[in-house]
Amino acid sequence: MNREIVLDIHGTSDFVREHELDALETQVLSAHEKLHRYEGPGREYLGWLGWPMHCGQEEMKQIVRVADWVRKKAEVFVVIGIGGSYLGSRSALELLGHSYYNEMPREKRGGPQIYFAGCNLSATNLGHLFDLIKDKEVVINVISKSGTTLEPALAFRFFRNMLENRFGKKYARERIIATTGEKGALRELARQEGYETFTVPGDIGGRYSVLTAVGLLPVAVAGIDITAIIAGARHGCKLYDEDRPAHNPAYRYAALRQLLYRKGKVVEILAAYEPSFNLFTEWWKQLFGESEGKDLKGIFPAGVNFTTDLHSLGQFIQDGYRNLFLTTLWLDKPPLDQDIPLLEEDVDGLNFLAGKTMHHVNDKACAGTIMAHSAGGVPNMKIIIPEMTPRYYGQLVYFFEKACAISGYLLGVNPFDQPGVEAYKNNMFSLLQNSD
Image (cartoon, rainbow, N blue to C red; front, top):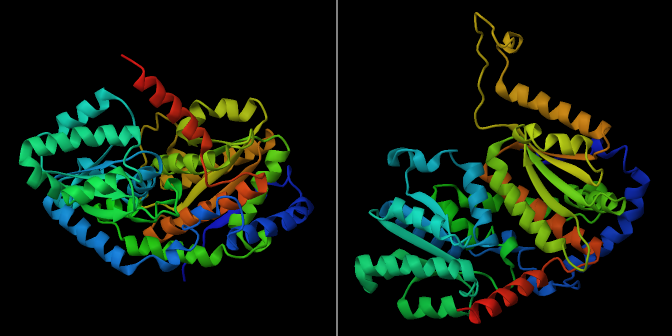
């Protein structure tokens, strides 16, 4: 029998009392009803809510079919996108794949190298990628709901130009896959050129789109089981549907965040003890930062990788300004473990650890850090994932999506728009249009 993802809140007991959680229950119930009755702000972007339960089998088959073709055809697969158009898939690749996937021989990978572009405006970064792939068989997946977002649109120009110069327009179009909205510039171009296309659902925002073709196609190209990811998210739909925080860990997490926020804890640090969580942390930062940071409100989302960052930011977290709390992602069973060897000379004085595993040491580092931070005035929550499989990945994504929606409603904001993003875009385009 599969174990469930567990929320451990013992590290908050000195900061939040059970009666405070009980008092918040009416507000959580109201947020739940707004969400599930499609009555709250941003209700036009709730397609993600039931997506795992009814995502189309035909589209899943198309994703698998196209991914299989890419795996056979391409030496390099380039994903062009920014924000939610790449963070979800990249997080899945890092969590579910080999740490050095691109450096592995082709026969071990079973598919192409996978690179990401269009997520910055650096000519150097783009040029170095071109140097790396210029003589290889390349297939690209351009992801943009509108087709006009500056960073991916510019990157796509370069890659499309490269492919058309190398192969001609007829053969270049066979190497371009567009994941885009039902309308827009990229949809129109894809129709004219005859690109293979996938649709970004109009009622799902970018940061909630990882479980659609946006995230699933690159993951399938890496040979990861996307049907298991959806199965895990579907399980999450059922688990996190209860309206009471006592019986719903996603809601309990959301409620605790809000209670800590009301007590002046305005920064949440997501900590993980495996480097493979780094891009998941980036996805989480976008999910919560873009959803909650508005109307002069919000918890600032930050991330650290322990134990690495204990040797840098650990000092600030332990002894700095007390306006923060930690949420730790803990992987109960890592993909690999190593026994610590016995050394005859014992120069480092660590022979007392011989025979124990690296994961055992990591576990004690985690426990000791949580103890120290709690004693130092930093509340801690811990999310325990039994192991990192596609199924647990899908469940974890849905856990945070559901928690974020409820947390946003508890905060009193629309968790599904991003007016601040539009403000900088308008300024940027105005400056570009009026520059020499």
